[in-house]
Image 1 (tube, helix red, strand yellow):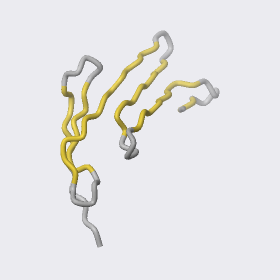
Image 2 (image 1 turned 45 degrees about the horizontal axis):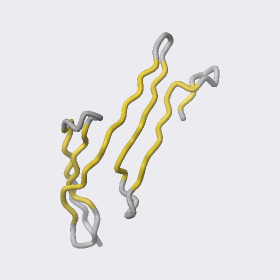
Image 3 (image 1 turned 120 degrees about the horizontal axis):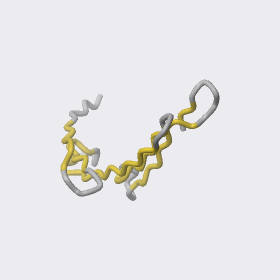
Image 4 (image 1 turned 30 degrees about the horizontal axis):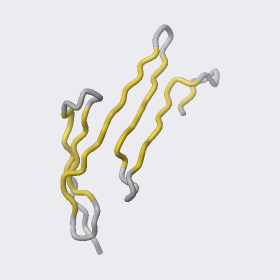
Length: 77
C-alpha cells in the first residue's frame, strides 16, 4: 500500500504468483480525490533461459489484449 501525507491509502496492489513465483496477475487500486480506479493486468511468459528464468513476457489488459512485451537478458557470473 501507498499512503499520502495524511496516512490515507491512495494505491494498493495484490499479486498472484504461479508455482515458479512468476507474477501471473496484478490487481491494483488507485484512489484519487473523487474516484477509484481498479485495474487487472495478466502476464504470460513467452521464453525462458536454460536456468528457467524468464527472458520474454507479455503484459495483457483484463480484456486479454496485449499491452506490452518485456524482454530481458540475464548475465550470469
